[in-house]
Length: 277
Image (tube, rainbow, N blue to C red):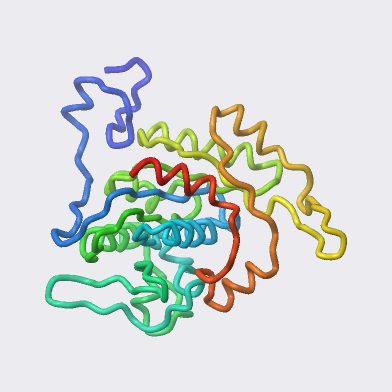
């Protein structure tokens, strides 16, 4: 047993004999009719930084490159993916399982908002039930021939993120940040979580990085000077993209037309992901 062992084997990455005996397998089997190639989790240490936006835009970008993409909305208490794609109504099921909703361009979506009578109904569930819903989205939904699945994670490191990383074979993590001083703490938490769960970090995406004035074409850093390059270097991470504050992008999300918005900020990241398949 390691000298500094806290005897919490379920979240330990050490390869000790005691751990091999005590570790429990929490993995959930994918539905027998499902096929999912790559699973990418989009995470952050806090809310409101744009995880849902990045998840949506990544799914759209990879879809445009000819891949079949899907989004598993794991933010059970704050689901926003269906609205960004203009999806309304309930998900349907057949005799074999639950079917994801399809967007206009063929992206598969599963979210708790597709199971509620009204999309404004609050989800008042405790942690274990929230975690169970996420496992059901993986194991009971029929994900048909998905090249890239993006998991829109809730903020922080609570029950749901732990369940995702223990139950679903996540291939990599993308950390979303904003240009504020506490970004270093947010990234540090994500890095430590990924290390504990033994999941590689693909890199960082900075949202709300700048605003381009339509009158003079100059870029302005609304939230102050960004330190994302230093943070990325400190943790030996790749800076994958910087997304601007764009009123047109916000309007596209509000109108449910995110998949018809033209923006190429994530193209370098898309090329990187394409090489992994």
